Length: 92
Image (cartoon, rainbow, N blue to C red; front, side, top):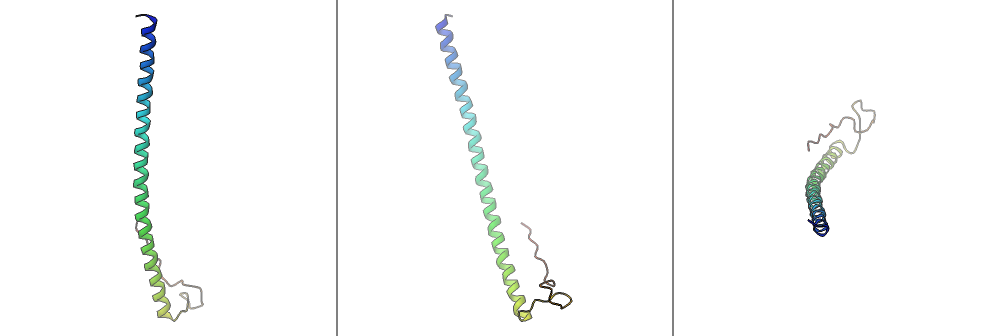
């Protein structure tokens, strides 16, 4: 092999390596993009559940105010806020 053939082979090898690395990078970017899409969908569903929970909690608070006549009294009746209301648990 003469010098010209070695140069051509080296150029082709470098081009193939660059192409291979570019394809690996493209695949990694694509996987990351899909992963972020899944995370966005998951968080969107979580947000919808939290909004529904908030509406339910707000409706429960409205019911509490309607039953008690708008008074906020603690367990001891000394006006300590809504201390006798049960906490809302969220299992998302």
